[in-house]
Image (cartoon, rainbow, N blue to C red; front, side, top):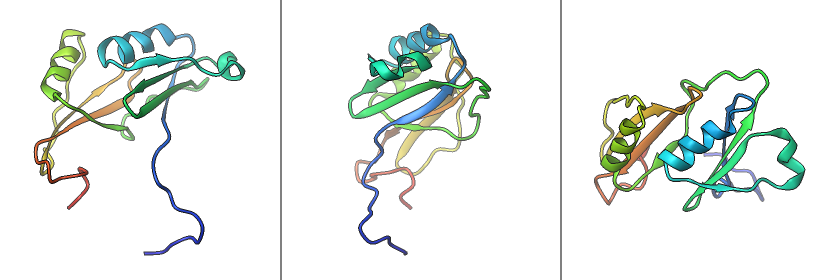
Length: 136
């Protein structure tokens, strides 16, 4: 394993996903209304760029407007959740398609897409000894 003296990555500050221009209301309906994120004000100096910011617990999510928007259909954030079944029910009630995949040891999971086609993964720990889905 290589190291870089004086530099250590310790956490993720936020996740940014792209969105089309003018779709902030759709983003808020989905991320706040369906997923339960709390809308956060963007700093004044970034307001003119469009997009919106959200938070849930220690997870900050930024949606930024991309003039050449193309949804991320493979690259995705994976959100660790509590009560995955309730989240799945909320998504289905909102008309969101749930995509099942191979389950990972110690986790239940599924995917869906946000209103713009960005892929999102949701996981719930079923084995408390597992810290991350990638721990093998």
